[in-house]
Image (cartoon, rainbow, N blue to C red; front, side, top):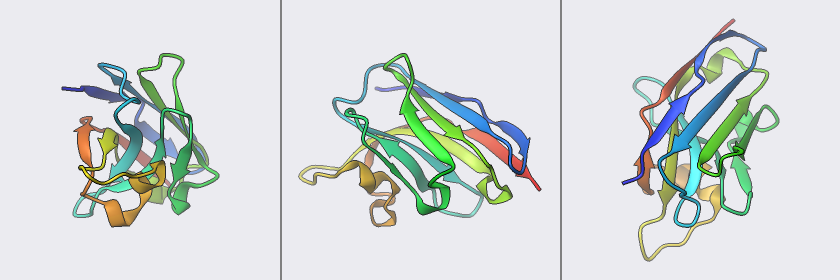
Length: 134
């Protein structure tokens, strides 16, 4: 059972930055892709950014050029650097360790692909709120 704990959320004005961190209870990259997702009330959770064990990354179009996902100095830590934040980035952000159910294979892009939404399996953190004011 992998446990994921997020931190770093908060309130910021438009154009500001936040840095989210996620600490996993064990090393996950050998089995899972790691990603950040976000959700607003009454909407589906959507993939924001993802990374694999080789450092390959993928991003949702809405955050490309503004968000950066990376492994932390501790291999069990996942980081999301969010710059030039916009009010539409307001959401609860979740860290996840996911893979496709067998016999499917996926690449890191699947975590931000709406076609795979709700179909991947793995573990989720409790989430951290990000609020961006105009």
